[in-house]
Image (spheres, rainbow, N blue to C red):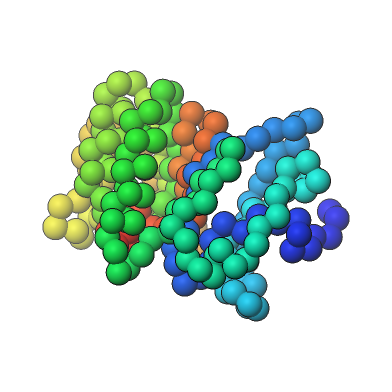
Length: 202
């Protein structure tokens, strides 16, 4: 693998504000984008980054100043970036609305990896998707996902399973700390945002 530098990555979020990205993966000459997380301690920390196999054809350069300013949204032809704001619940409400729209627009499949979950409106949208024939598969953490839901005042996973959503833990001792959804195998929603009220509004 070739070496990478800052001009060959896409910065979509940072450590002090939950970032959310919805995008469809482009494919050019059979080269598909991929992503991973790592820590970059200066000048920002906890960055969520996208790497591209061929930055010359896939990538775009991002001025770090817009991340530091904490702007609510950025968009390109195939990507959008959104930030929560603990001082303004409208930001979380807007993100929730976007997620519900995406779930309602799914035609065939929704694949989910979510560390935590306590959003009734999202559960209801997923149940409605199952009723119209969408296949939904969900992997979560055994403790922070399945056990936490079981101990909640109003558990959501049993309702989802009753509707036909396949839910399982990742079957290992470490945390299943991913947070992404794949819609119809074409669009990915990912970031540092947990699917929880705290993640959206705190």
